[in-house]
Amino acid sequence: MRGIHISFEDIEAFAIKRNLVKSYIRDIIVGEGYKQGEISLIFCSDHYLLEVNRNYLKHDFYTDIITFNYSSLPVISGDLFISIDRVKDNAEQFAVSFLHELMRVIFHGILHMVGYDDKSDMDQESMRKKENEYLEKFGIK
Image (cartoon, rainbow, N blue to C red; front, side, top):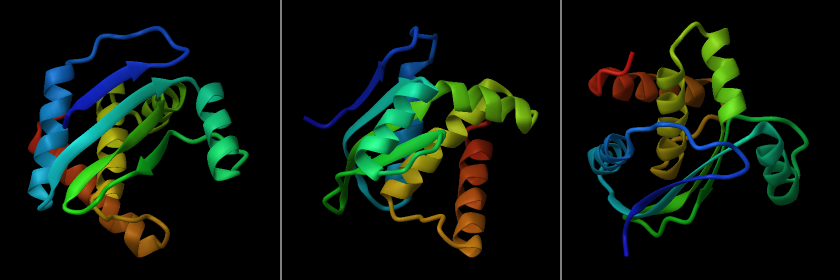
């Protein structure tokens, strides 16, 4: 079964337009030339994501998102773990709305799944340009 699933771990669930978020994800995947498989968005706290980072990636630092890519091209599948604490802090730091930052982070994870990287400065610039392109396309302020 191919679907997009949204869940909350160790945080209180918040209002999110699930169908709209799912349609954005589908549009990005199809727009990049792929097919949508099983995708899970797991919203969590800083502490929860730090433990995921330590246990699975052996990194000992906070981050806004960790993407586990299980894709078997052309089908895109994977898990996106997103720290809502980081998203809130980032939104404040960058003077954007919570929704804008949340969607940017989700798009960032999906873009990783379809082959974008952010290891080099040039890759980061391409990734950011693509994130902004989709934020603008979907009218997210």
